[in-house]
Length: 194
Figure 1 (tube, rainbow, N blue to C red):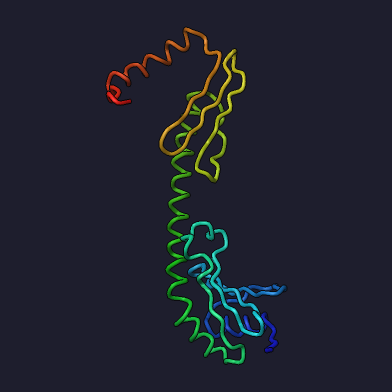
Figure 2: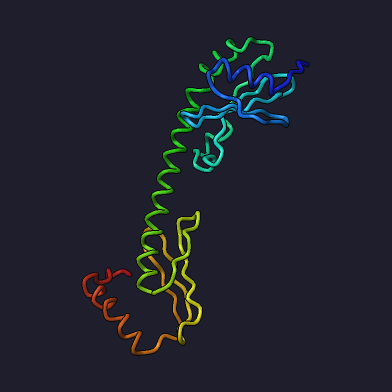
C-alpha cells in the first residue's frame, strides 16, 4: 500500500497546477483552490491511491443530483506532480468546471428569487406597518401577525403569490378587503368545470 502525506502532495499539486494551498490545514484530506474560478480540489488517500475530487462548498445543493459524487479521479501517488496535473486537466477539470458553473448559475438564480421575495415582503411590510422578516432559504417569507386588535393570522409570501390567513376580522375591515377581491373575480370568472 502506498503511504503518502496528503498535505505535501496537495502542496505539490497546487504549485504544479498554479493554484494555492490555503494554510493552515490538517486532517485526513487537503484542499487546494483556484481563487479566480472558486474551484477547489480535495486530495485524499484512498487505500493507497491519491483521490482527487472537485469541491463545491455551499454550492453543493445547486449541483444536478445525478452529478453528485461524479467529480473525482484516483491516480497513482508515485506519479510526478506534472503527471498528476495532466490527469486532473484531462480527466477531472472539464466536467467538474462545467458542473461548478452550473451550480454557480443556479445559486445566482436562487439569490435573485430571494431578492424578489424580499422586495415584495418589504412592500407589504410597509403597507402593514411592520418590519418584514428575512427571506428563508426556501425563498419564502411568513409574516406572523399575532393579535393586532382582534385580528389573528399570518401572511405567507413566495415569489409567485401570497397566502393570507386571518381570523376575527371585523366586518367593516373585511368589507374593505373583499371589494378589490370581488373586482378581481369579476375580471377573472371561474371556469365552468371548477
